Length: 376
Image 1 (tube, helix red, strand yellow):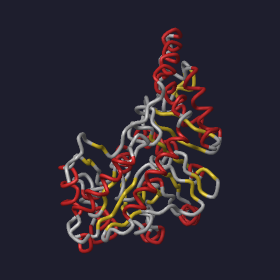
Image 2 (tube, rainbow, N blue to C red; image 1 turned 90 degrees about the horizontal axis):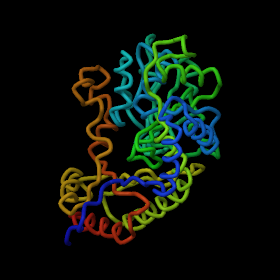
Image 3 (cartoon, one colour; image 1 turned 180 degrees about the horizontal axis):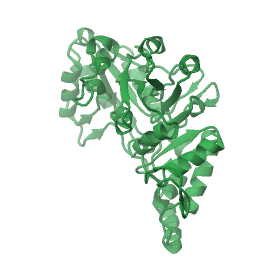
Image 4 (cartoon, rainbow, N blue to C red; image 1 turned 60 degrees about the vertical axis):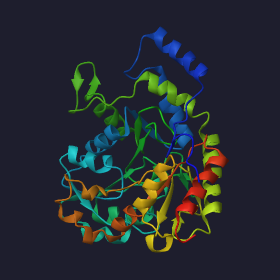
């Protein structure tokens, strides 16, 4: 089968209407206020909280600064239990705060932190749990919260994949002490770069806002050693427009996910996630998992052969964070302690998914997968 005429990436950013954006840009140009809690920032923050069904949200320049700041907000120190199966920013945020990450294995179904293995990793130095809603699939929020309550430790969710996801009708962002979002260009909802912290009370919101703006409480009062992590007016204006199309984008993503599932259901050696009951998904990723024995070739062989066909999937997440030089010396990074994460990381490929992806291209991608399988 011939390769595709042009590269199909794992994702493609959805952009707001340019003419509408130019109107907002003119307002910003006329106001001369580019940052520092301008009118677009304030309006975006207000509308976004309503849109997501959360009480308080604080906008950030990017998701990594939001993660770093969230740990400061709750004065987290010592050790934090987290997952090795995520993007490196999750663990880097701990390193930047002088916190020791403690890796715990993942659940084989959800690919999230396994709550059954958390308690064994708790020590007197443990101050928080930092799980990730991987691919937007909800963590075991009730079980994790119970552990946090029993041991008196905080729960901070890396919800970078979970924009708009609900569980039993409630925003997934309402669980834990804080939730952190990313609005990077690769995300389902993007503001080019950007992020946010979701919290549940006004006092915490105030502390977050102090810390992201150098610790300033007013012109002459600095209440904490903060950082410069503010979202600017251009990103905020862009974000306001993005909310208009988000729900339609999710509908299109769901259609693509269902087409993949329908076309792949009879292919031996490929598994994928089904929708979860009582969860409203955002379909931010479509990961497949390759069983080499059944499929006939390894994940890496398949990955590179697809690239030859101009199909650029991504191995989200490979290698594990625990395998990077900065972390592999940790006792918890021992691969023997992380067998499920090790296996999944060697099996995963996220296939292209974005609203503009055509049915014909999806069918071509699947036909290439079938053609490369030695067992089909």
